[in-house]
Length: 140
Image (tube, rainbow, N blue to C red; front, side, top):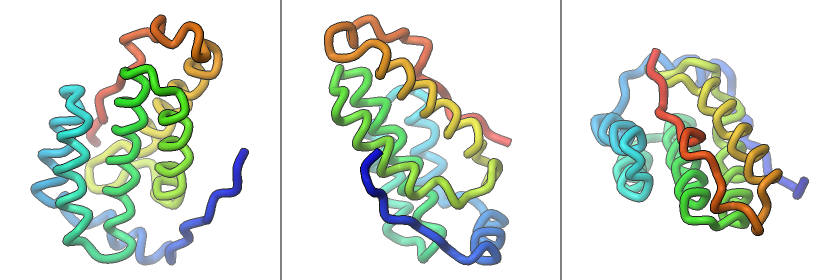
C-alpha cells in the first residue's frame, strides 16, 4: 500500500467536533450522496468543508471523497476508486464510528467492500460491479 500521510488530530478535539450539529450544506450533501448524486454531494460537502475549522472540516472532506470513490466505481474508473479510497481513509480514520449523526463506521465498512469487489473484478470485469454495492450513508 502506498505511503499515506497521517491525520492525527487531538482526540479531545475530535470528541468535541462530533458533538456539533451538521452544517446545513453537509446535510444536503448526505442527501445527495444517498441519491447516488456523488458529484453534487461533493459540491455541497465541499461548501461545508470550506467554512469549517480543523479538525471538523476533515470529516466532511473524508465523506465527500468517499462519494467520489463510489462515483469512480460506477464510471468504471478503477484507478480513481483506489486513489480516492486512500485519500478518504486518511481523513476518516481518526473519527469515531458515530459522529454528527453520521455512521462513519459503516461508511468505512462500505468502502472496504467496494475495494474488495473492485479488486476481484479488475479492469476486465468492472462493468459487472454489483449495483447493490453503492451504499446510503446511515444516520445514527
